[in-house]
Length: 401
Image (cartoon, rainbow, N blue to C red; front, side, top):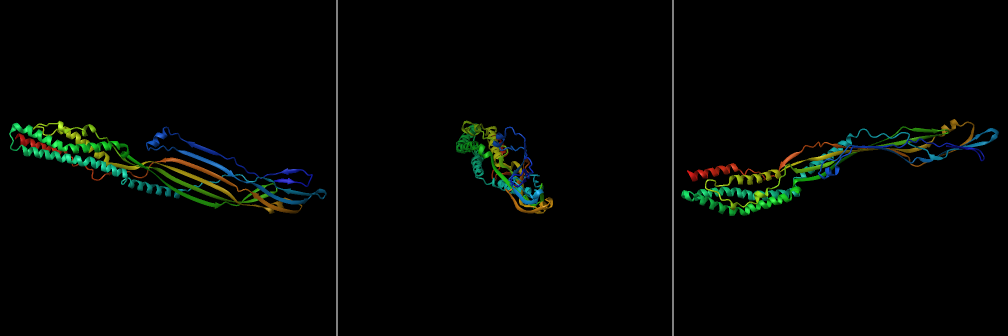
């Protein structure tokens, strides 16, 4: 406010101010190797807290003019002058109860996580993986049935043969069968190579998900008075508080223990093996072969689906705005004595706001349960090497009884 005398008289200045210095703070924890963690779909979220305060506007003019009798009949004129009439005398409070926003964000997050988990069952990549495993299983099944047929052929051909020709019949029958198995072995090898080439692609799939929730509240604060010398202002304030919660993370579908096909086994030529009548079948070699096939099917047909990592972000802000500022004429009349008349020209100010902001981020333990499922039609009971041993032993007894 400024006191202005008639021309030639001294002048005194009074400016309404109530400034509060802005404050900002940040705290966080370092995460060494965070780029590598992100690349490997691991949690790289660290705790972080940010708070800030800021002021906008508040510059203007509040003015009152009045005339008062002075000594020797002089008249004196008083008025305010421009300046920052308002500053943040106190910061707006942040919203405290944001449970509704948190629940809303959780519900959306869980819904999208469940949707992503379900979608992993029908992804194109899983369809390709299923077909690759079938390419591996079908010829291997044919090969397994061929071993039973081979034993049946040996048993049939040796019923009326003399003992001296047993080895020849067994070896010739094996060679005939092995040449027929060649395409099957080649198909198994090709399927194993395809699986190895797509190892990284089929081993895991990831998708990002998030869920948001928001609440807001508003209220008019009690009427406030601002007094400085001969001027009093009546101030009406509106405070709006907002809170936003966001959960985010990654859902994964992975083979728990993916393995590569042993191409040394798949690439062997069985025509190089000549079994004797007593051996009939190179059982230890076949055991390794079919164990490898079984391990591949078991490893790749079982998948674990769960949330790889998740985090929570809470953002809150509160904004206090002056919606009405008026001059209290009665106050000025009460504190000025012997005035002859006056004019109140009002208050002119830019829009004033004080704002408080806070951001909190933290890693959150996934609350959704994981589940494990098997790709249908990929069981390995058909291998049944025990049954093959029984058939081999029966054929032996027939040959050497």
